[in-house]
Image (cartoon, rainbow, N blue to C red; front, side):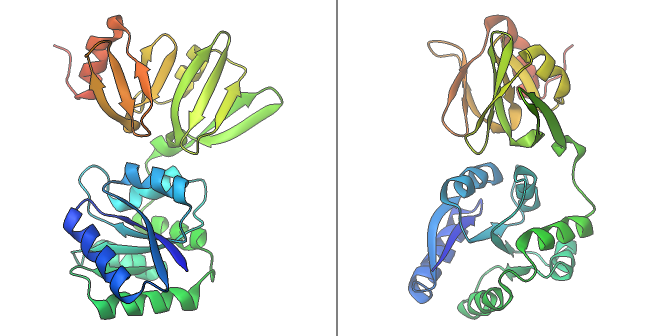
Length: 253
């Protein structure tokens, strides 16, 4: 049984693909999760560890190709879904990956799953994704790696794998998308200097947060943010005005 996740910002597209799989391929494919954005998809993949991801290319916040920025390596197969015949289709073909044009038909899905089973692991998904990203012209430098100093050396972590950082006296706890906590032998100020300000913001003396993973901000009761994984972090009163400018991309007069 192939464990799969559907990532698509259109509710109708998600439900249509789900119903098709359940009706015609229920003995071969199980849908274990659905998501409406790249960020939701990242958490769903870490949670469910799927064999296959149906990934929409055109989504409003981040296009589907950005999904791979959040993983050290890709160990799941990918079938892209798109309503457009654009430049990306040729890149997907060159990388020996598969795609489905919307509206997806039973025959298209059947043939795509058959191709997937024939080529499973040859070459491994990571190699094909790297070829795809090369064809598309590389990735944003914001998603480079950070050398995190630990007690016995260094841990290399992609910057956009970091959810938030928490001060712990003269140390820092770094929390990742995988749910890991890395204790760093440096204060939070040092870590803040190493991370790109376009991606991270110091919302409190004890917290540095990845702006990409803020779900909402609230002033009710106490000023705080809610992250994509449901965690709440406080926002210091003195940081509120600047934080809101950054969050809403407003420029200071």
